[in-house]
Length: 79
Image 1 (cartoon, rainbow, N blue to C red):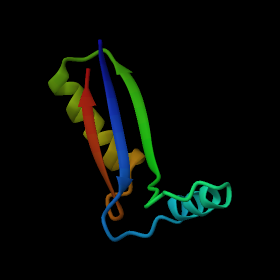
Image 2: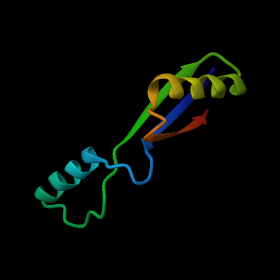
Image 3: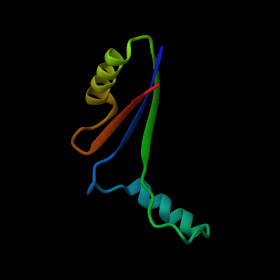
Image 4: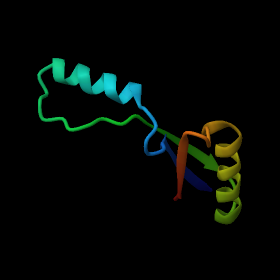
């Protein structure tokens, strides 16, 4: 069995309103030393496949559903 961790984040230069709002809320709660906050999605997918096949399938999953390739990038780590 292979476990894939897929990390999806916005590409550089794309606005991150969720990160911006979270930073603002944290500052209102008294956390003043925050330089920046980015929102990132993480998926953990268990698969019964060899690592090469699992990686290819995860890339397809990202292109077809999990990520928007116009504004997001993804990284796949297998365990």
